[in-house]
Amino acid sequence: MTERYIGLMSGTSLDGVDAVLLSMDEQGRPRVEADSFLAFPLAIRQQVLQLQPTGPNELDRAARLGNELARLYAEVVAQLLAEQQLPPSAITAIGCHGQTIRHAPHAGYTLQIGNHALLAELTGIDVIGDFRSRDVAAGGHGAPLVPAFHQHVFASDAENRVILNIGGISNLTRLANGAAVIGFDCGPGNMLLDAWCQRHTGASFDANGSWAASGRLHVPLLQQMLDEPFFRLPPPKSTGRDLFDLAWLQAQLAQQPDIPASDVQQTLLQLTAHSIADAITRHCPDTRSVYVCGGGALNAALMQALQQQLPQQVISSTAALGLPVHQVEAAAFAWLAWRFTHRLSANLPEVTGASGLRVLGALYPR
Image (cartoon, rainbow, N blue to C red):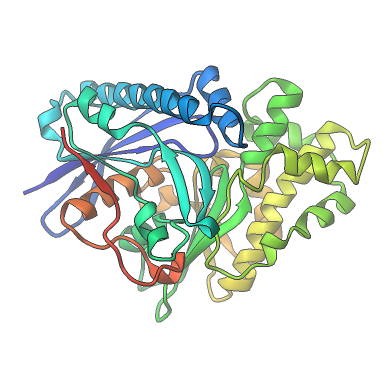
């Protein structure tokens, strides 16, 4: 029988919640039937950002925000079901990533909030969440988790591929014939670009990279930022706002004062492109095709900069492989929910560094 799952993803870009309706047939073949999106209210974005650093009354603030997120998740689920004229009973389970507040695998934990129990109560659907903790318990980073899904849907005998996700953080998956899958975080994707744009223009993101394109590259600043030790770490590795936040950027700018804001934006764009290109060159030398997903795939200036840094690569979007750029991550968490339901392992130890294969997730029954 075909089973239906809903995947929910709200990432470090903080733009909103992506929802995907995924059907899985008896052979384990996925098919996206529909998708929906619900933007984050400004107050939610601000509350998430305020929880990134340590501060007073964190437990209460995190719990209250988790409840608000659950209500938003339930709203986008209801929206998707209404659009498809489906009852909650048609869905086997919701796979909910939750909103990352802290990512500290070196300290043995990663924290995503969203009150999955409340989400199950509001939707009347089983919810599977907390996908990352089991991998961390096994000694892994708990991230990235999407390479297993990339392997399942994008692997090809005909070509070696890189699947590149540019969300708040950029991460890649290498799918090469005769070689183990590898995947890791490359560094900041849209995160710093969006934060700097918000601060100086009031816009939540730099559409098509137009503001960045109006600035000039500041080479000393770029070289200084690329000296960040994270970029030299070998995989497995993962990162997030715990490192690449505005405080990190301000510390960089303190050493290079009086740079025009648009020049900083252009330099941040080049930081994303250079760090991705370096990761691909070093760790995926035998691949010639790069398929991009995530919000960064819609940034024309960023895609142009990436192509300039990788002149030997053919860069296109995952739409060429049958999945539009905005569907991939949410579809991955629907697939992870399917894996959990059937008690199938879903991590790749060679990607996360875990000591072995693990079934990921925790069930919150309807």
